[in-house]
Image (cartoon, rainbow, N blue to C red; front, top):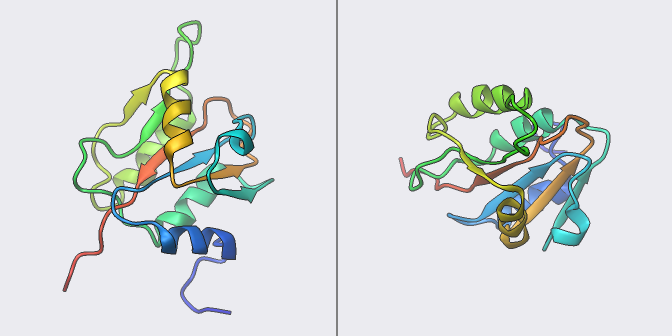
Length: 144
């Protein structure tokens, strides 16, 4: 047992985060995302809300200062007029972190899927809301 680690951080997620380097990307996906067929490394959080898992990961993970976006979102089809409600949750969560107050990069589904295939890992959650997928990019630890 470790002190100071969010209890939602599982050993597999800790392993992934510890092995990621600056510029590596990690996908946090909803339950509908084809994570197993797209992942190089897969971490399961079945039954857990995506925002809770992302919040936990961000307690350990710095965001990348070297890009013009805080995260990457998958755009819904044109038939869905409003932005998914979880996007506001993502905005609030990332804006509270250093280098997280930038706009989001929004990609069409095929481009998002391709980027997810190249990501270091995919963390699949039990999130039921549609289009609740986000990619975040690992930053660096600043020296004292």
